[in-house]
Length: 432
Image (cartoon, rainbow, N blue to C red; front, side, top):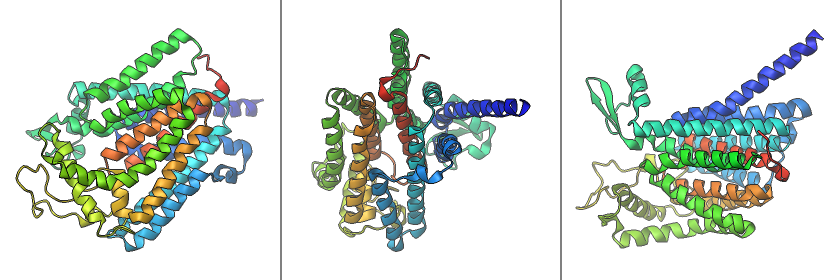
């Protein structure tokens, strides 16, 4: 009996530890987005290990589906692409990260389908609670101009940035932080919105569900709106529109998202040239960051034509970037005629770094992922469609596509939406 009691005690502690992980992950990465690389494998293992203990066959977790095969083809191509890349080390690193991301998400997604229903619901609720407190933290930092962040930087000087581009120093201490420093934090909060709202749909009590849903939506929307991160603001508005449409027309909207994803690769180059030709880079009514992007997009689009078929190599844009002091900057331009450290657009960066071959594979992979939304429980499909809209909005206008924190954040949100969908399987509700 003592052995049984000990085993039960170990299992109890393990379950508590797992719930703590699901709660702490969104809290910590909302505060420190660059740690997503650490929490993605932890979450994947937390989902996979219990299933492995019951089944004892790890190969079952790696049964490929169409979306995985499509992403795998992209990773294989990037490994090949790295052999002629301008920065071979960065290209091989991007390929390895994408492959690892695909394997982690495949194993964890398969495990979710076989997980204990009660434990899955508890983990999903723990994630939602963590996402709520993570959003409150970001809101507090925005309202107080980074009070906690400044305090941590001043307490640990090693965490202070080397340049004063985004912070202001006085007597060796950080006294002011620009709002743009929190753009990554805001993006993480935005990624968590629709998985969290889907989890809250499982609460039986209608009044309580409506109250918590409104509170969660407010906690996410307010920091996004008051931030300076335009991409997250576009994601908020765009995903709400997609959700409303998908709630009424599920399959047509899912198919439309797949078509629009592919169309974006076709249209990105001509749209960039047209925007520049229309002098949007000189338009005073546009934010400075938007005007700079028009210049970067047009110039990068020109460079695409230098290596149209195979590209310059994954994550190789910085290697070919012209020094800012050397690049031409005509009068009225807020940015020199040069590329940035990245293209500020997944679609354009794919053209520039991977060429036509990479564009075809990436378009196919994205479409394959979107079309799998129709395999989720009926109630979960609009939430998953809105989550994909968030990803597209942020990927289309914000960071470089190979940044590890962003890639791992996307992996986490895939697992969160899959986990949330598992809690509404068959239309059941959680009495919690």
